[in-house]
Each structure stands twice: as structure tokens, then as C-alpha cells.
Image (cartoon, rainbow, N blue to C red; front, side, top):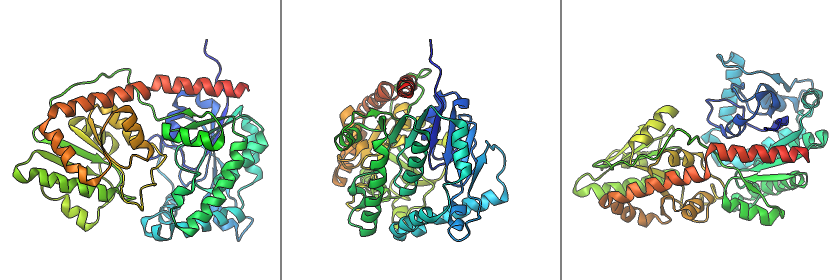
Length: 435
């Protein structure tokens, strides 16, 4: 007999949209009764999801205005909106995009601190917020931990108001100083953030993390026994299809090129061109909404390499099915090495499900590469100089491509099957809500 699902309140940043770029939380709560879920969020945009019906939005643009004009209305309850956005909503999205655009990356540390002060002095703790929380009256709180201080303060306010059990979710390195590198402003921001995270963790009844390496580190820090909660996929209707690799071998990369990944993709392109110097043995295609620098674009225009621009999500799935090798790329450059240190890319679960050989590049110290090595589910390269030899070996031994395609698929089915992952999640949430 299935237990009644408790009412869950999720104070988070991103708006929930079934077709949006950030879908981790909606996918987790796809197993829930939508009448038993409510979300509070702070980014621009209107919700459009089948997972939840109750939303409360704190308008960040309005919070900024409220610093100077206290009468500004900063928040309200909103509903699902599957139609066209209004002109006002489009303007808000444009303003948000400008604040987080690549043009501001040089000043990101300063901008992050300025943003925190806006939220510190802005008006977000309102009667409307408290009324929404009280009316929904959750049985349990699901609290994602973010790398921003204002969210920790908002979440702590809700935790203290409800006095209900708290389940936290850490899906990135949102605590250690390693992410701050040697930037004094980033270090100051991280010091401020850590104080907020510590306060939340004092109220935490259960902690979910996203990767084994993250579990080991945070269990030491917080003296807990955290649980793994990774992105899941539906394996009920699929099975592994062993196919003979194409001639030439087809390799694709689908994803962003920021935080040093463009350098990694460039190194792959150089290796491909070298392998193809005596005849085309491998074809490498890059699909990304990011436009690479001229030097990288030049490398992706010759020697069996091609930059194909941006494509839709459904097209990406088809491209993965038609490929032989899928590239997972992180930077090996010291400046960006820790960017994905304790994260777990949702791209990997797509790669697992496709059943194609994963060619992974990154430091063995970061969680996704550590995971692939532990599971023996990818051909892993931890030094740019080894890329050509490892790729050449695959081209000359196509049975290895099929072998690692099977290993990737088996890893996904073993660790990321939706029925098991979400079944365990529901059980733990129900038990925690009961206290």
C-alpha cells in the first residue's frame, strides 16, 4: 500500500519549465502528486510545468528597486503559464540575461557581492511570502543549496517559520574555498556563503548529494551520512543495441563551451586532424549554442572537424543515437579545473542512455571524471597529450567503441534507473516527513 505523499515546499532560484534549460528539480518531483508540491522562486519567467500547480515568485528586478523605493511590490503568487510571455515578462528576462551575460564575467565576483547587498537591503521578507507559506502548510521542506547568500537567508527564514523537517540537496561545490581560487572578492563571498550554509545544515534532517566524491567530502565536513540523488532516466522500454561503428568513426560534442571547455574541444580537434592526415578515420562534430573563438572555430573547420551550431533538444538525442563516440569535456586548465569539482553533468545520463562510447576528458579530481573511472563507464583522458593516442586506439580497434558503449549503458541502467532512483527518493522523503 503506497503512503500518501507529504506536502513539499521547495524554495529555489530557477522557475520550473518542462522545456527549460534547468530541469533537475522538476524531473525529481515528476514522481510527486502535483497538488502536494509548491515552489518559491526568484528568477525571471513564468512557470510552465506539469509537475506543480502552486508557485510564489519573488521578483529580483523589483527587489533591486525596493532598495530605494520601499513601497515597491516585490512578490506575488503566480500560476502555470503555457502561453506567450507578456511584454513586461520579456523585458524582465532581457534584463536578467544582461546581468548574467558573458560580458560581465570579468567582473562576476564584484557583481556577485553587489547582488548580495541588493538582497540584503531589498524588500523580500513580506507578508505575502509568509501568507503563501502558511496557507500551503508544508509537511516537509526540500532545500537546494545554492552558491548565493541571499538564497540561504530566504530558505532559513522559511525553515524557521514552518519548523518542519528539512531535506537539503547539494549538487555542486557550494561550500569549499576551492571554488574561490585566488580571487579575494570570491573568497570574501565564499566566506559569507559558508556562514549561511552552516546555518541551514544545522536544521537539516537528511542531506542528498549528487556524486560519490561529493558524498565523501560533505560527510566529513558535516558529520553526516548523505544519500545519492542523481538525475534518472526511464530504462523500462529500452535495451542496449550493439552496432558496428561507422567508417569513418562519428564523434560528437553537444554542450556549452564556457569555463575552459573550448580549450578541451580545440585539443580534440587537433588530435582528430592529426589522425586524419593520412586519410579520414574519424569525423568530429560540435553542437553548441556558444560561438567559439576564431582560433577554435578555425580548428573546427578542417581535418574532419566541423562546428554545427545550436540544435534543439530532440535533435541532440537523435544525433547521439547516430554517433559512435560522445565527448564529455571539462577543462584541464588550472584556472577552470575546479569549476565542476563536485558537480555531475546531466549530459552524462543522456550519454549513458544512448549506449554510445563516452570519451571523457578532465581531471581525475573532479566528481564526474572520478565517477566514470569508478564505474569504468568511459574512456578517460586526464592529460591533453594523451588525447590523440586514446582516440587513435579507438579508431584502430572499433570493438573497443562497442565495448565502452555497453559499459556506459549498463552504468546508466544500474545507477540511474528512474523507477529505483525516484522510488528511493519518495521513501526517504515520506520517512523524514513523519519524523
